[in-house]
Image (cartoon, rainbow, N blue to C red; front, side, top):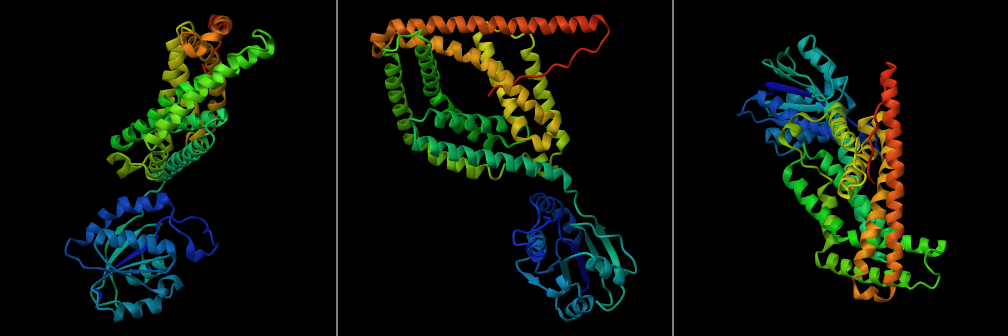
Length: 457
């Protein structure tokens, strides 16, 4: 005879199923996670020596909830009872009378669990999603019960934002995998390389943003794979940028239309590309990225996060701290310091990708910063690219493979030096104008315009 009945309402479900059938509605990822965190404590209230039978409605959301219950209670089998889905109290009580189990945990739906609890106890608090109530039945299922304990369902909100972030990371990793395959299929395509590198930086940026909450092992393992590919492909990307500049100088007449420099750059790119492809195949990079994408389908969170989740406010506070750090670095940035500009652009680019991909959690105001940051990082990028072109042109002029085009490389180096000077002067004038406007506003007692941060691609 049943001595204890635990009534459980299923956890938080999706609004609709892919099939459209109510029976097929699943738990949301945040709903399932909330149960996995809360139920070990809830069902420990039954005691260590209790052997319970787990019954469930045939609805998927109830079965998934019952799976969590069975896991934490050590129950191997789940019995499906149609009466729980049909919400047939009479049939359910008859099944209780017929069972040999002394403790039954029944996972069902509202209002069935509310009505049955009220019938057995004479009254009961409302069952929220995931709520569990243990009722002692000294006279069996036909008699009046005694409430042993009532535990409200776990809060799901702290897991919902986490689920959004996890989907964003998984999507970015999947996109990276696709971009890598596209590049390997067409390594001569400069756009394919650029998109591959953007995807690398995007995933790295997300993981660096999440680093305070993510397990170190997973974060470092992924970072190693991503950084290795980014470093390995950097020179090839630099050659593509240089080639575009050279083509532009030919079109403008700065270089003669018969210049052999475009051909020399193309040959150098082919050599660098072959070297990169060989390295990627040797390191089994495509396989490593597929493994990374699978790994990031399930982010590993630190224990405190696994226990409590993270709220939108947690993510927004961290974004603001990172944003303000970048903003401070940009204020008064020495534009003539190439290393400082590179770091500022990199940091701004990372914030751009975070705002772009996590806008659903960060909110519209912070998400809109992505466009502004992208604009600023492009300006810093133009400065960095010009410096990189000058440096690469000087480097190539020392190579025997560029012996016949050294004069043209000198033209490129001088042109890019002039571009660096022009961009630097323009940005400095604009920065000085902004400072003077701020000083004038402060002198007049008005609130200065808020500073806005820049981000790198």
